[in-house]
Length: 127
Image: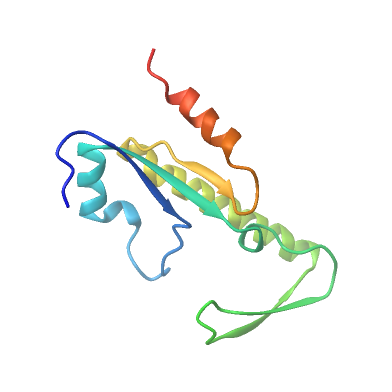
């Protein structure tokens, strides 16, 4: 169906895409949607995707598709690299949505969401 008047549209996703594809902002549908409506991306961040477990040693994990199995060292240098990648991804998403006039919200899966959501609404409140 089609929205005829300006609406608030919430995009709920982890926004994880295939690294070989183009950026989300390059999708014409997203640009058109942002031009006609107030779009609020809500980015879900899973704890397993945003921080490594405590401890030392090797972490064995499998890709979401189950095709590849990998080992990751839990050394301090690997943790620093991982943290930098998470921060880079967060910054890239903000930088992606901002030029389109989208005010995004990052929510951690399993944590309270009411306060961050209310803060977003307060920040966006028209005077």
